[in-house]
Image 1 (cartoon, rainbow, N blue to C red):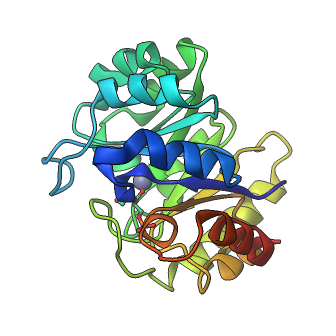
Image 2 (cartoon, protein in one colour):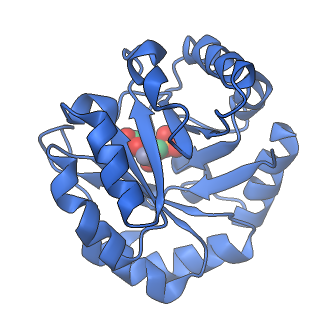
Length: 220
Ligand code: DX5
Ligand code: ZN
């Protein structure tokens, strides 16, 4: 599968979001990652459907919506109406993850499941034939700029092996948290396809294009 870079707008300059998104698109971003946090499921707050709607007005790239909220089912339709292309729900955030995935798919958008660092892959294995993406958290969710958890490399490898053993499991593997020039190659080698990067892309001094080019080169 081809390498995809997904800038996380959590680390963009919120007062210049349109500028940063357009710059990232021009620099080669393949999709945009939008973190939704409610202050309950994770100890931070971030964006609402109105930000997703605003993103649609400034970019044609797919919008990858990462729900870090309690009761995610209630916000699936608002996210679809706002323009989400993929909706990712944490396995730990709902008692009926299969139902949440079915709900997302019923709107004709892509569906993904997210696993926290401490959540075993076995928890989501039954979803493999019906999902489009699995997001492996490589930090504890809630904040940008955290340090990559090295043990997650083995988890990505195991997930890739499981994917290869079943013909109908053709989901993409996405990684989120601490992705930078030091960690991306290891994740790519382990089997990841989509790379979310926030602070590495938006907090650097040198050009965004150089950074995206660099990540793509290192992930090959
Ligand atoms: C963390 C978020 C990430 C965050 C990644 O909970 O899900 O998407 O923006 O930021 P970096 O790339 O700085 O770790
Ligand atoms: Zn995220």
